[in-house]
Length: 120
Image 1 (cartoon, rainbow, N blue to C red):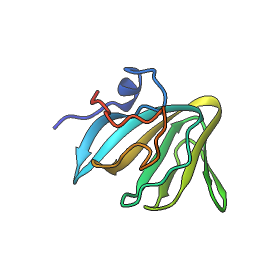
Image 2: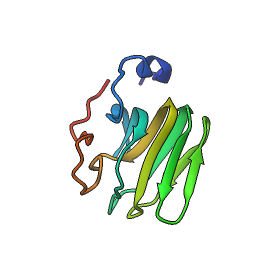
Image 3: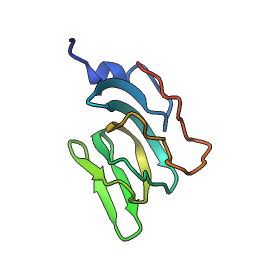
């Protein structure tokens, strides 16, 4: 058991839209990611996802609304809900909680999808 310094972990990578695993609990991975620009519309049939913003502003588009997530806030996307993450302006640094078997873009094929995420 050791404390994990998230700021130090964020400093270990620069690639965007490629989450890094920093912890595991109860069948869930704790991940860090850096985002900028647009991702892809996708959903996860069986998994909820938690997005917690540390830096920047995340805009999460849903089919019926748009939610802004600011530093210190988090958003839970329920399983089966289609979503489209967008970051305009400064890069977003965020923490994710999701089940270990979650595919990055669900069943959607996308060039930025990273289903071989690494521990840092």
